Image (cartoon, rainbow, N blue to C red):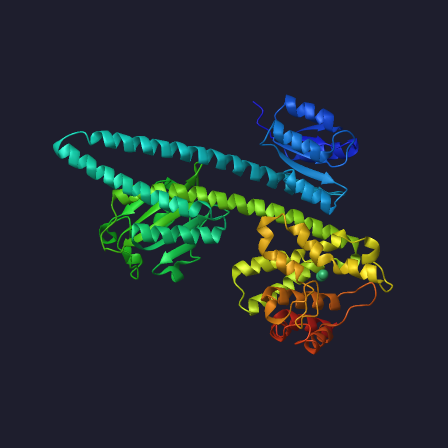
Length: 531
Ligand SMILES: [Fe+2]
Ligand SMILES: [Fe+2]
């Protein structure tokens, strides 16, 4: 049987079709081509394809319409748009029609290969996820049947009745614990927040002193502590070990839980090697998805001082099943979010291609902003928001004519108004993307001024969030130190003096100080003085 992934390439330019066909065949895919949307539709009805790459503008059915119809025909198909017409409208339309990635012509072959590979991976994870949810529903149904069976047992008499009652109470309480944890974690998609919440719930519900989650690393050779909760969590965080070492390693390789009732009497555990080891009793259970071990979950020492028993192992394994699904969901979401972000940044880069003077500007604004934010103690979550906002801050310029952007003469009032509209246009472009919600107001505010004389909302001082104030300094510094159509670049020291001169007026003095004393500024000025 032929197990190759089937890909359909649709473009009214046969040359491009055959070029993509050859590239993908070299990657091991089974590729068919079609030069029109109508023919492609027939082929999609006839055969099963896992992936489609299509041109946007074609006679008859265009690329968007084709993708829409293809997704009705086979909902699991993934689609990449390859187009020479990258506009804001097509990008937004593409997102709405369920396009999974977006590549602009002329494309680079590595970019194309990467997009195909990544999109197919996302499809695979989504399908596995759907299967897992199905399995979970089935398991829940079986659990309910068991519960009913136990209720029947209660009709018995004497000792049997007492036993069955105890068993029922135990099972119902376990079920309630699993359900409560499951309810709390299923809607959390941020990996860090998810792991912390899982462990907080486990410590509370299972009444344990300490718990941790370890993930198998990308190479599959080690285990790393990704989250801990309770006593000793600070020391444990980030610790690594080889996959074939220790109890956690045995849990991964054996795909089975391990219970250590009393560490002092367990000869699988050599305490003499670790005289500082304070643990008395623990359970380690594997996190498994579709037979693949993602890592392990450990619970250590009960608050009551009792040892763990087989019932605790069963309960932890059931919880581990739920945690595995939530982790896989969060990973899927991270991949989707990354794909979506890459698509938008590709658009932002196509904007920079319009104007050679702004090439790399967004990337540099992002780097300078990160430097300031780190010095000023910004949280990890805000660092991510800042990176998104900085990379996309000028995306609104995509809607402004190239003539105005590249004009060297003085701009007239209408042209100036068009340029000034880019923060608001950027906001409109980003609005449909929910995962960029936190970045939106910094994009809108990146031309505000500390003294309230900026645009579009004339916000100043405490009305301006710190992240926005950081971006305004980074944006101005890069503008000053880069060549522009109307002047050549300024040296670092001069640009810093200029920032200091307008600190308190245009910029927040604390932010300017943080930037001026940063390592990157020192390095840049040292480099300039040596050459
Ligand atoms: Fe701007
Ligand atoms: Fe900018």
